[in-house]
Image (cartoon, rainbow, N blue to C red; front, side, top):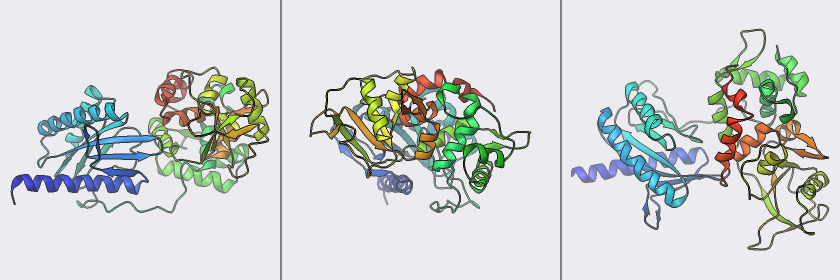
Amino acid sequence: MPQAIRESNKASVAIKDLALRFQSLGWLVDMEPRVGSVRADLIARKGSVQYVVELKTIGEGRSDRVIALLSQAILQASAYGRVLSMRPLAVVRVDTVSPSLLTRIERFRQDYAPDVSVGLMSDSGVSRFIGPYLDGLDQAPVDGRMNSPPRARHQTDLFSDLNQWMLKMLLAPDVPQHLLNAPQREYRTGAELAEVAGVSLMSASRFLRRLKEEGFLDDAGSTLRIVRKHELFRRWRSSAMRSSPELSVSFVLPSKGIKQLQKVASTLGGCIGLYAAADLLDLGHVRGVPPYLYVRRMNTLNLEMGGLLPVAPGEIPSLIIKQANAPESLFRGALSLNGAWVSDVIQIWLDVSAHPSRGEEQARHLEAGVLSRLLESKR
């Protein structure tokens, strides 16, 4: 078989393998899309997050050749990302991967392309992906063989609704008190956490056990301490991407600004979220995005009671109502301002991170400001 055909077949197999990995994690995948001048290898979508992928293949894993190929993939993926307004992901697939090559790839990306996500795949069973929302794509070898597709594990969801609430409880001492409705205290046992969090002892025990299994809990001292926070927050942000029903509405009467929003929130029993919540807590940075209101259930919503109407086609919404993915965590941590519930700062950070309207910019504003102690703390 001619070399060119072999390389083409190898690239096709690599693209298909990557597409299957994305799909196994709930992503929607378009293989070899053609959009105007863009001829990318793959586009992957999950919620509001979109990646355009450029993938290269090479046989030997010599670091100089892999880095050169990765550089080309970074340039192409970046160009495609600018045209399509998507996140770029540059991937190289080799026969075998060494620990030193993984280190070189990570350093190269950090030094020269920190805004571009990268991936290194191999036939030998080691794969590494670096970038936001790519949790789960990594693979490690088992007895020298490539892993089989990941199977569902019957264990507690680390980021279930109540678990997110308990995470906020454990993190509260590093968050300004007026930005999170949770006691600023430490906990010695699961029983203490369960009592203060208002959950069952079994729920707290399962949560703490899962945290420890994942390496995020240090319980060797006198109090329970969260560790490896950056990795924990990366995974938490990824889990928060789950889509949920939403409805664009307009006010029956002309908008009177924030007071009208607070009145609607109070009437419908909702919680103001995202950018509007940031504004109300004097943490705003991005302007021009319609306010969001979280509700527990969309199917029990009475728009007439709130003086609202679904928007007509082409009409700019006055408000977007969204069903909360984790209502217990959201409403228990929420703050009361002028009779209306407002999302806590951790919730705002989670929710804006993946929002297409300058969400990362708002998230970085929070990280550099009120959340700096939380993110930098070694607790």
